Length: 155
Image (cartoon, rainbow, N blue to C red; front, side, top):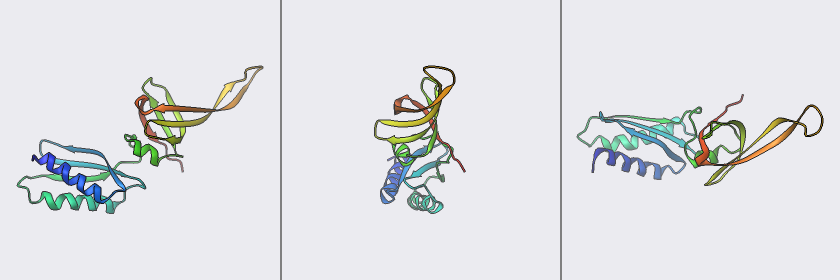
């Protein structure tokens, strides 16, 4: 088993023991710098990162390999990558860039395994007469059509 395979196996085991957490990214450089990025169904706190770090570090210390290990949470401004992230952010406002370069700022109304449903209000010209009217827009986007989606934080 290579060093990278061992790290992946240990990380999978640690995440099995912490079901509320999930892996966003794992990178291991040629110099054995291990970078783990996590997210969780209700966020990731410092203790979660410490627990995963300890679980990996304890078993990797027995290896005859020099390494460095960093375990972090996905930042709030990080783009959503997994369906599980969309599901946990239902009800929040997203800034979505589609594959066709359209930008939509909308509320994530629903997310299933194949689609994200976005809703927003827009001002459009009246069909008859002058002026504009506010209309409710609704679109069901397949994840393959989403180039990038970021949660917008409002205070």
